[in-house]
Figure 1 (cartoon, rainbow, N blue to C red):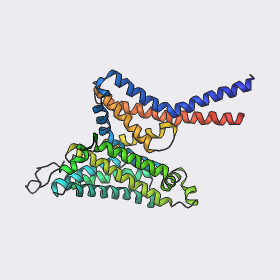
Figure 2 (figure 1 turned 45 degrees about the horizontal axis):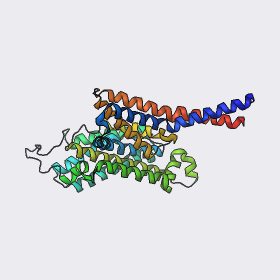
Figure 3 (figure 1 turned 45 degrees about the vertical axis):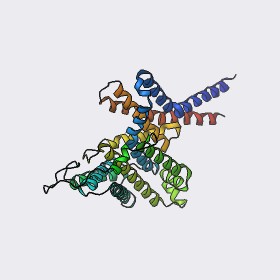
Length: 349
């Protein structure tokens, strides 16, 4: 074998290794972590725990799907946590203070989420404010508006109103079903998370809308020249993100059974983390629904495993940071190395 042939062969091996790590590395890390906790913590591998983990992660995963949608058009929504927290307070106010039924509360929350997304779209698409600055502004406005509406207080059944009377409503059974209900042996949050993941996957991967959204995120100028209505698609992405964030808030509200004003405060970081993790899954290198879902599952595995192992809660943030770091390495470093090696092999041949 000549020196040049050996060099090309070594490149081929390096290329395959880099591509294999970029494609399967994150999946392997997830599988290894699941296997470790399944061996060391017997309760971890029970069916009840598996569905409990999925139920726990559903609000984070759904908010992450919203971030994924915004990332698809080349943006990022920092208001998803505030949007979800707003949904918690507004749903509680509608049920407890206004005395409405669950269906009305859900409708009000979904409309509010769409309006928050539309507000982001106006700032970003029409006012041409950078997405990070626009959604950061929206985050502060929504958090402040939420506190103004509820007078800075959490809302619960039988609470005392400012006029001295007792709140007439309560968290109704049909609303609480969003968290406590099940279809067969699978809880409603798990079913909703899976259904929304499939829906977003179909939209992004199997429809003309999805292809247009990806084109806008990849090269908006080229998409515009190809006849894509860039503004419309970007606005639709942020409105969709707002609706998904509000659904996440509905699940949180039904879970805690009151309008906790602090709900949703930590959701932003987790939602962005699982969306970024999703970029690295299977070496796709772009936002995708199934990658985000797997990222959410990994976060749930880590949090549950740490809790069962008796580690303090503050280890969770450190673990999430490590998970995100590993995902970014798989997404960028190894993919870039595979691309460089592949380009070098092509040139040599």
